[in-house]
Image (tube, rainbow, N blue to C red; front, side, top):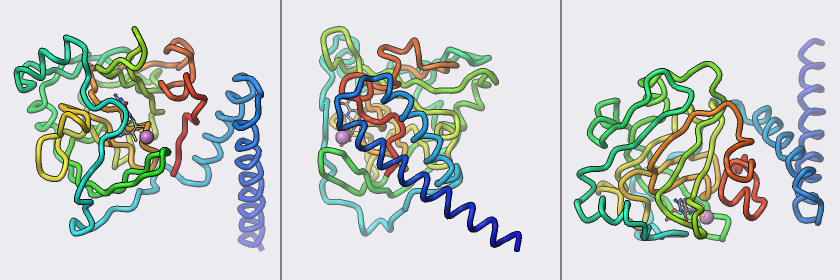
Length: 253
Ligand SMILES: Nc1nc2c(c(=O)[nH]1)N[C@H]1C(S)=C(S)[C@@H](COP(=O)(O)O)O[C@H]1N2
Ligand SMILES: [Mo]
């Protein structure tokens, strides 16, 4: 009896979620303003979290499934002098900065990140522009870094700042909530298919957030900033494509 009621409630929730998601689709294709999109987006994110609990894992593949070529999309070589100088020196001087709502802001080398723990995963990358590829990623769990710097309990989002300029003065950026940031497949990756991360794929360090679409996987990371709101991050929608093209912030696959 109780379990009947539970499955009925689950069914009803699923149907409600479906119509909300379908509604979101219509809204995002219509000419409604960003305000409507914002509300719908928050709802979509909440519903998706209900449907896919935070423990859901993205599919992992055997190494034999790795794609022969892993394409590059978006920026393939940041032009700014800061990046060019690091590249010229084989990234020996690279440090990832992590600050904002953390107790111990830090600047870490790739070796220091490695010392926090290394994880390997073979996953499929899906880009909204219509291609997919399977790659073997090696990196450090973002969760390990967050523990290392002691994130404040007021932090709600991790914002990823990149080296590459998309428009004059506007560098690529993305963000995750704390559940996604601490997910057991969310990596700061420094190797692809057994080799140091190629420049075209985000060297020396990029994000992997395997349950979401390609544009969430920020390449060329320079800094991670912990914040309590996305309102003051550029356009307020939490990412370059979210702000400039109205793409969804929670880009669940
Ligand atoms: N810094 C930065 N990160 C980025 C992009 C970008 O242009 N700059 N493009 C995004 C998009 S749309 C995709 S599909 C993936 C592409 O990753 P790849 O070049 O390794 O295939 O990176 C994402 N992260
Ligand atoms: Mo993409």
